[in-house]
Length: 200
Image 1 (cartoon, rainbow, N blue to C red):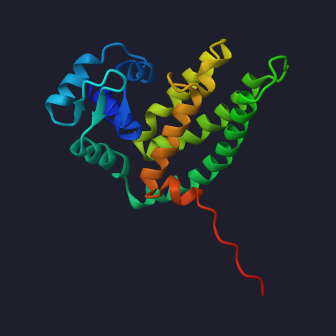
Image 2: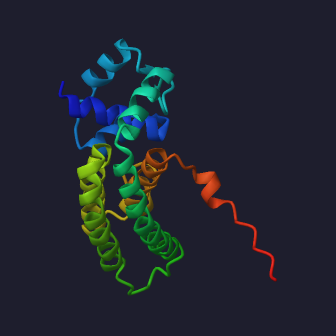
């Protein structure tokens, strides 16, 4: 088993918590996952609960290992990641609006959602290139986003906001979580409105 597949399986489980083999296969674009999962389970890094819906989860030891890989970069690299994250937040607002528009669209609309997604994805791919050079744990996201974009523009509507496939929104959510772990931040803290400053 390649170390890359092993690391990426563990990474996805760390970010998602629980996952089905089908979701893993879709995310990693691979059907050969029974062996990696079995080996990771034997190493005590993942467990199979037997739950038919979401059988696989990560153990505490597996989570620590996965998070160490994410955060194990230099202080200078984290500072640079923080700078790129500012741009990511701008793109995040654009994607949120795109997804909201898609979910509330009129069936007869002529809006080209594919073109809008392409603009977001082109910018995201450009943003990720320097990030991957300093933080290898981000390496999987560029190709997963590109694959979701291609499937959506190719006519598979569920690859924009679907929850049972490796949709663009799903991958983007995971990418956001990876930034949080890397930078030692949390989604909850970011979403809590900041109190307004008193006026003089």
